[in-house]
Image (cartoon, rainbow, N blue to C red; front, side, top):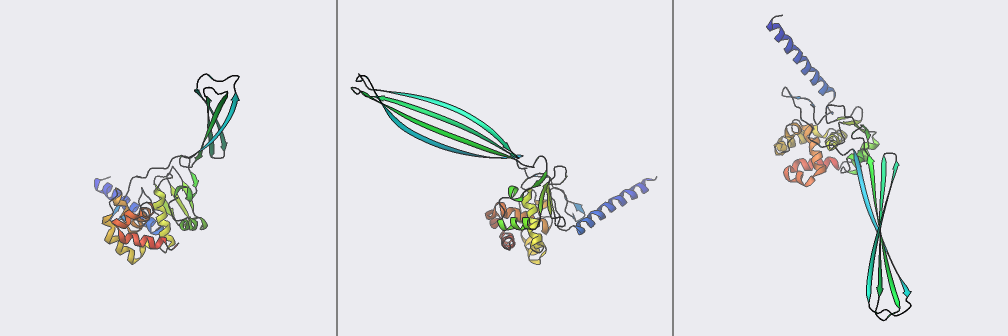
Length: 285
């Protein structure tokens, strides 16, 4: 086969791949990823590496309670004390127990410190014994998440900063969050299947929820008003994933929702029109 024919075939294959990706974008306009392409922009596929750290595979919560009890008793001596003296004795006892229930492990550590102070006064036949018992109970509850193994995750567990009404709309609408470590992208929102799929349970969820908010408010990113805001303020976005976050109005809205959720005052200061528009859509819930 001549070099000219080989070159022709290679170009033909590339063209077919590009056409297929454009068709996919048109068929799934609400889908987006953090580390993979949403659509082809100016003939280039934009791929951004995952910069969002995954949440821990376990979530721990520790509570500490302290209880102090004091009591005094008197002891009668056989004869009067020749001199005054105070004797202090301290005793510490530690114990621990662990219980497992489903995906939770509860570890309880108890420390009991008993301090006994014996007080004798000169020329007195009464000896006072003061006892203080300090009990400290430390309880650590560790919950195993699906970060490492994959599976369905509750939206409230990984996106606690989002307005409650939005979370309720997500839940009531039958939407689900799935963690799938095998996928090549960081996250994608699919309106057709009512799912958000993540590579790991990370803060990428806030970006994908931005796509959800846009979808539920009538494709908020597609209005003429927002297109004008996008053109006006996209260059003010300065994070390291700027190329991805500003490649389209849709990705800019989703990332701006993430910014609004995580640090609204910073967004308001740097991109005031974007802040006002995102807030308006959030308030619709």
